[in-house]
Length: 319
Image (cartoon, rainbow, N blue to C red; front, side, top):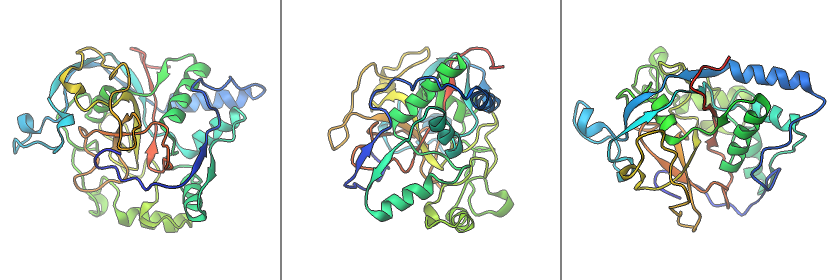
């Protein structure tokens, strides 16, 4: 596993609902439920007008202190990117949404065979309707492609460039994807990211044993200026791209999609996909330019800190 991501190896056997990467078949005999679901998804889309921006760690050139924000070289060099307009979900996909997707497709989801403590924590994390669902990359990708099938809209996982552009409010030089570009925890009504006090209190409210590791509802704190919530914590977010620590040195100008094939392996020998956002927010965490990577299949561990939000690759707002 790459920098900053601490994963606890578990002796587990993960059984996905489907073994291939194709989206599930379109649901039948539940047209009303499906239409309601589609309208809910559409209502939570934020249109992002495309444009040009400087992607990567802009600290040395544009920060007040002229120092890098990220100690790692993979967020550099700063490079120009031009993006076509698109729409992005304002929230990470919730447990309620993901479970409804499984129900609509007569899918049971992930079967878990772990120790009782790990199984209980997994079940608790994924039982609260308004908090983010937890998925591996293949599950995330399949979900977004299913949305494309049932809506007839070009849904997909966001590219890394799309994620950063939206997090930075269309490429502004802001280091935190919050309402005002700062990170403030435990400051009462001035707080804009979650703290351990928040997560522990929410765990108690919901009656779980998760404590400070509890997820929170997506709208617990205000969105960024574009109206997008929860991009600074509450779960890493999968993006489309394969991870390459040197990709920024050769990234194309127009709508970069990441490497065409797997490039970089983790210490266990698995090729990795890019993750953005953060598992938990806090000072110096959840920055807009920091890159992470992980095994897309989450072999040997549960994706308890990995989430998803989808985009629509259309230059016009979705109606």
